[in-house]
Image 1 (cartoon, one colour):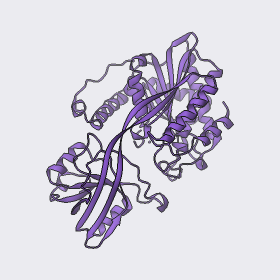
Image 2: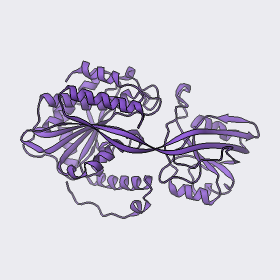
Image 3: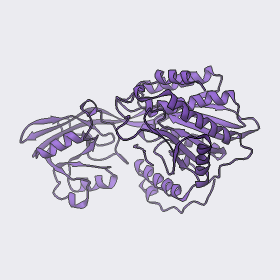
Image 4: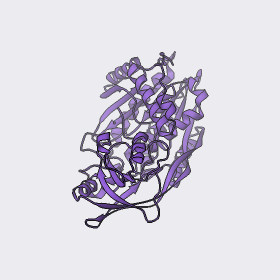
Length: 440
């Protein structure tokens, strides 16, 4: 493995790579060329994504004193007339029934997820629209209005929704507004995103597959060096390593697109390769490695025995690793939900350390030696699985993971507008044959 080569590639792809954008496509083409230049067969697999185009959004206080606040629109909510909607204002906190009295004809402010059942109540009680809180009240001014775009949770909503920063929300509430105007013009659109998939065929056990993944898209404003250029470049460096040290089992190296909008790339990969996943014995994901100030972490969506194997190897190698069972909010969870035991490696910053999801996510906070330490351990672990005489990973999940898998399935059913699937009671699976939630 080559530190200089990895750092050069990370620097090359450290630009804003929003899901479905031309820049995300450019990054995918860079990864594809690296694979091809190394002589490793690789393809770009396209998939459709859903989004929203916001053409106009504003929030004004009309009475008692005029003031306009910076806001962004929430996709898959309703558009207002061109002139907007005008009404009273009420802060409904987290939307409990006791908060929802006297909201007819008002624009309400709410915190937390706005789920379909809350939208239904708002609509029935006559609310005109809602304002969702975002950001951190202690953020510095330079990143305060780098609010992260998102779509409504569940099917398209019948009332308009916008986001406002916490600091502005606090000021808005203290001003006791009597009349406000909300304008939102939004249109649902479809786009194209991509996974880059390289394959190294195994020798005598080539019908069994070990997969490595890391998403390469970023959020608006963010060059995404740490989140998650580091993870994608880790996958590429492992491809170089196993190309030079051919494994017994087949290995897949997947740079996933559109993770930042709900793990879409990895979920689409699992859908498109559904019939093949029975041959995948383990999936190893990387999401944010190489930060200078940080600690090594692995979230294991697998059996407890497998987690202990990882912990054992870490002790043998002198690799200080914090391990836990659970479903990480990254691409490993898509594979676990599809029945493939998986894990996510990350190097996480201490509180007050490096930041993600804003323009500060650059290479300035990263350290190539820390990056290589995580990479080196991942190579040893991958080599043990890829070259084991027999498959060492039981195709089952710890009880805690089983429960979280079912919870995630219900959550995504609601997100995709399939409430009947979300409510369905499913029996616990028998043992058989993705931060632990990082923000999605």
